[in-house]
Image (cartoon, helix red, strand yellow):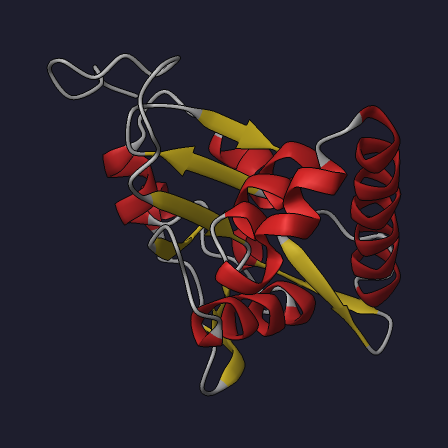
Length: 173
């Protein structure tokens, strides 16, 4: 992920900015992204689609497949938070929810945070009909990027056939 800024010790310096990597193709994730940007922030949050070219450029050492499966937050000094810890640090950045974040950071609160993350994951799985992160279930059929499907937030899913590289052309959707 690159070296932290000169003179910044990730274990002892305050977090000045957080980047939240979210699945832009997930309705719940997009809703939470929109909710987060409307909240007053004590620590600036930047929301970046997980697995995007920009996310890969900025954080080349992250497992970008994992960032699509589980919320990942990256601090400005190189800190990486995933799962319940990512949710807690995101709430900690919000003025109205910092107190809740402190309560969730206790051992008992962490169990509650983990339960919330698991419930969200279960909901996402139900929406996708069990499809992997690369596709969304619609009417019994999964739309997958690998098959040529592209999701655009303002327009939904559309099919763009893959090219015929190497003389092998796909037959269609």
